[in-house]
Image (cartoon, rainbow, N blue to C red; front, side, top):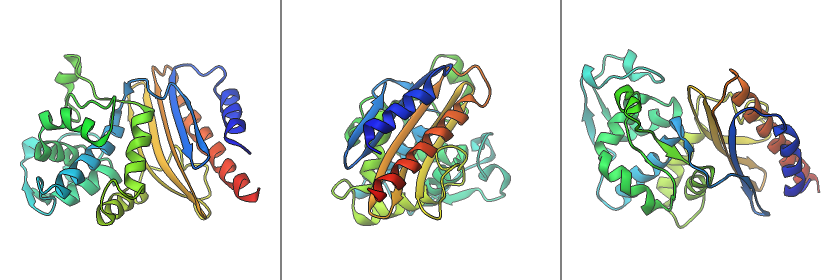
Length: 263
């Protein structure tokens, strides 16, 4: 199966899809995409560029990820995560980064944003090569959302972020290994990896969802093949529709990789 054949398969799968969708799939043979540069609501996929920015600042000597960060009950926010159910009120920044990715911890994410600085986040995404990504509010900031503040990203930006983690030259091997392990240890596997036999194909991913939005992005590893994928679904009216189509795309990617190795 070629990339163009994969694109044709995805076009069939997307026929009749109700909502907006953007995707990008990249491997060594090229890229197929749909609305890849379009700005979409990021939900928790915004945590991926936050991860890269933290490690970029760490490598520049401008952020100590090994330091302990104290926080109070007022810093605890609802939604996904584990810090809200724990008694501890301090955490190392590198552990907050890990929780931000592996369990999409919203409190940990806000601690990361505080450590970096919200204003620095707004500008810093451009420094890591992202064109559309924009952080305008913290996690679970309902007042900010009602005031029109939203976090944005594109499928293209997510592909760039994933490639920064995997490819040599963007970060040190130490940093890339740390970030990659966080994605591999991702606990939310109900989208792109869901129909994948992970005994054959390893998937390192980061999901995101809010009302009307379902997102996922991932690096797929199969033998000597590496593939990057990002899928963003918005304006969803039917519950489960975004998750269903992302699972279907993941399944098609898995079959593409297996067929590619057999060629």
